[in-house]
Length: 369
Image 1 (spheres, one colour):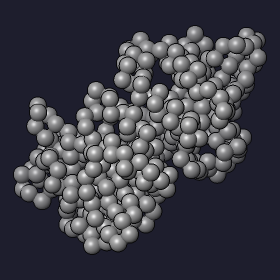
Image 2 (spheres, one colour; image 1 turned 180 degrees about the horizontal axis):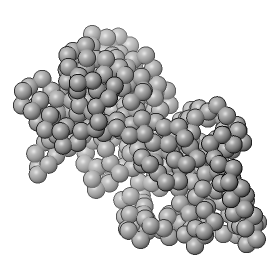
Image 3 (cartoon, rainbow, N blue to C red; image 1 turned 45 degrees about the horizontal axis):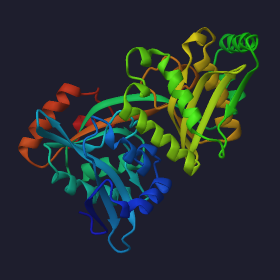
């Protein structure tokens, strides 16, 4: 434990933490809306969610909340396999909420407490490899001579500030493709006026959510039974997150309309000068017009020219066939397995790491230690 920071475990639904948690979510050095209070509480009812707890780290003198991370014990056949940063189907990023400058103190206080939780080792997934928090974590582990294993490593599409939307499209989208986009928009206008709309702060959000879920159900997610509306707990989770974001002014919701028909929608969560794409859906009856691509191209202009966002995280899987083509930059996402001090923990962790190992690279020289 750091002499300057103290850590403890609290219940995720501890209402006394609400104001501090919300403030930390707004001010964290690395933004992560998926560990904000509204998102965590909304996801508690997900069937795989279990019962997360909150790892809290405070400055020893002032008592100010310096960092927070939801944690849970992952079990296999009833046995505690590992303690982890809380993971479930909605979470797209596993970064802890940590005040800028407190990252090393956070991990020095957090790691000993995490070692005392049920589980053979520590699993940290969905981390930004280049965040101040992850760099601090690796520094703390190396200083202590502790091993760690890289178990997943991939890049996902992000949109970075720097160019206007017109310059971005010219630089990163082939002219033939841009010409095809113009043709598709012209074709859509033949069916009715094509327009793009954004949910206003004083608009009712529920009709937009209803339309989003209806669109999603028309696609492959609906056919495979994994659309949000296919599972009551998942639907309620997304509804709660979207409503809460609209209430606090951090929801950026777009739709593409042809005549009177909504054919595509895109919902983003904003944190300061960053945004995270939570849901995109389109009506498959209009698939030949590439509505998903067209709404993303329209959003490109909003993000770069209107909002001037520093970064938009697609939250998409690696090698996504659509977004990767128009957003060339990547955010490196990694997962780590970290054994505790005991020999048994090291053996279990090494076995798990061998089964899941990502290619070795600069993040993980000789698996460290």
